[in-house]
Amino acid sequence: MEKSGGNRANQMFWSIGSFLRRCLFLVISARPIPHHIAFIMDGNRSIDNFKRQPEEVQSLMDLMHEKIEGLIKEESIVNRYGVKVHFIGNLKLLSEPVRLAAVRAMVATANNSRGVLSICIAYTSTDEIVHAVQESCEEKWNEISILNASGAGYDLDKFGENENEERESVVKLTDIERHMYMAVAPDPDILIRTSGENRLSNFLLWQSAYCCLYSPSVLWPEIGFRHFVWAIFNFQCNGLYPERKKKQS
Image 1: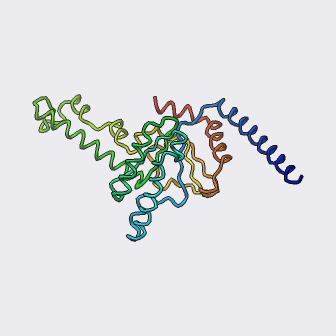
Image 2 (image 1 turned 90 degrees about the vertical axis):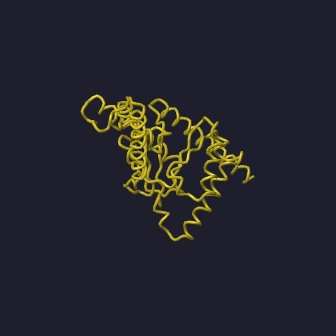
Image 3 (image 1 turned 180 degrees about the vertical axis):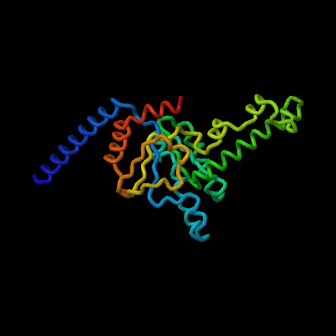
């Protein structure tokens, strides 16, 4: 009898909780919805992890390899929910087994279309910016060299004499953004940093200029539905969506 009463009570609480969640979803859906939410987990060290002792780095590689292989399985959570996976960062720093596993995971989830999960690994924002600038300059130099070789170029010994030609040869903002590791995703609307930290830890510095920052005091394993909902409410109530639209235009 007591067990039956307990089951009814649990069912009632579950129904109330489900009703409240539906109400929250209705309220949230009436306002602009963020397209990209980024997380900085506590303990994030990015490329600094590679400065550890070799045995520690190998342990990290082994752990990453195990977790990435789990994403490839058909019954994995990303496949159950139709999520496409991107690995972002200087993947050349990874051990070969981990790098190949990351490529396999991206290929295996490439046709998923209900959501996108971008995992920053071997990543810092400063490294990303340097990489993008280097790639942009190299690309522009190759373009100029090809044009000069064909006789239709800028004639580098006279470079700068013609203002229009100089403008055409300059590296533009769009060139740099196109070569960012994070070019596969829109800039984040919300950036959540767990454990109450108020620093970005060299994460998405270029992309976070217009995003809403939220720093709950809970540690990463404890973050839950209520924190997620509050972050979205904060984004909607602060009117940051028009700023994002203005930047994108």
